Amino acid sequence: MEKRKLRAVLAGCGGISNAWLHANQQIDSLEIVGLVDIREESAREQKLRYGLSEALVGVEIEKVIKATRPDVVFDCTIPEAHAQVAVTAMRMGCDVLGEKPLAASLTQAQDIIAAMRETGRVHAVMQNRRFAAGSRMMQEFLATKAIGELTTLNADFYLGAHFGGFRDHMAHVLILDMAIHTFDLARMLVNADPVGVYCHEWNPQGSWYDRDASAMAIFEFSNGVVFNYRGSWCSEGLNTHWESDWRAVGSKGSILWDGHSSFRAEAVPDGAEAKFRRDTQLLDAPLIDPTIPLGGHIGQIQHFVDCILGGTTPETVSTDNYKSLAMVFGAIESAETKQRVTINPNV
Ligand SMILES: NC(=O)c1ccc[n+]([C@@H]2O[C@H](COP(=O)([O-])OP(=O)(O)OC[C@H]3O[C@@H](n4cnc5c(N)ncnc54)[C@H](O)[C@@H]3O)[C@@H](O)[C@H]2O)c1
Image 1 (tube, protein in one colour):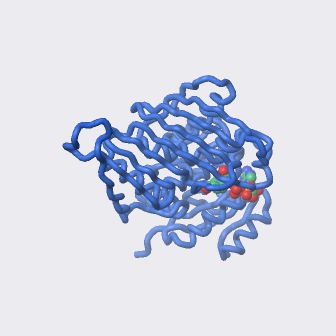
Image 2 (cartoon, rainbow, N blue to C red; image 1 turned 120 degrees about the horizontal axis):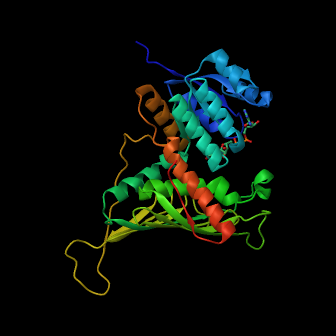
Image 3 (cartoon, protein in one colour; image 1 turned 180 degrees about the vertical axis):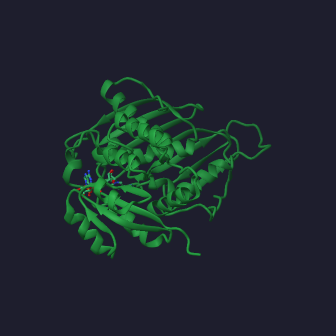
């Protein structure tokens, strides 16, 4: 018997839709039945580029859902449109996987979560950097407790990113558009809820951005772990990976992870001689569990499809992802008020 395929409509046929449509080509249990964009030509172009001859093209999500009756909607529209697309899709009986960020504001995110509760549908957020191989390896490594209990996590994100376009003029550009990835990854690694933040933003000398493109933030978590974020989108030379450069400090050792595939770790062995600085030993990084879905967008879309077909909850379900968005807006409020901000991670 042929396995059931999930029928999907993709809304928002801009730059990032390529990652989704490329993933679709590699996921057997998925079929794109409709493409929506307010600029119809973008949807037509993607239909042609990815050979989706059966897919219906339209400019209004309601009409395309009505005509194709999909199981799920993939929301790749701009952040300001996420709430409208998501709420419409859920009210019409679809589950939704949407691009980050969950929404353009906490209020709009709360509207999406209210619609989940009202309709009983699933809404989850694309946090592809969780599904990169290195991120999973780091998560596994921490779970072994080879460095003891995690106490401190640092992430450095330094990229000289010359986008041109809207980002050059956007307020809080680094925190709003990029840091959600790093904050969400930190939350995955700390495995607790964010409860407070101090943040400072600035625009460094020589910046090609109009507004603050650098930020430092200190987050407190419910388990006592402190997460330090230092980032800039306006930093030339010695750039980090997109996943950031990390240091994890535990009760008996530390891990350095370059955000990609390089790990270095040391810990004090049991029974080490008590002296001013204890001798440490190098640790081996564990191998990745081959059953974990990997590969950014492909890994997460496959995970979502499996969850919907199997009736389980996706890892980045929006009731949980809201906590990462709360870190973003908490950091922005702290930078604006120059005060520590209490984060309420619950919705
Ligand atoms: N996960 C990642 O690594 C990653 C990377 C880049 C962008 N993104 C996110 O993806 C989303 C889209 O970004 P992009 O770079 O593709 O932007 P884009 O501007 O290239 O594309 C957005 C598309 O959405 C369409 N659109 C806008 N409102 C719409 C609506 N109401 N209904 C249907 N279509 C609509 C636009 O016409 C455009 O074609 C954003 O939320 C962005 O933050 C994520």
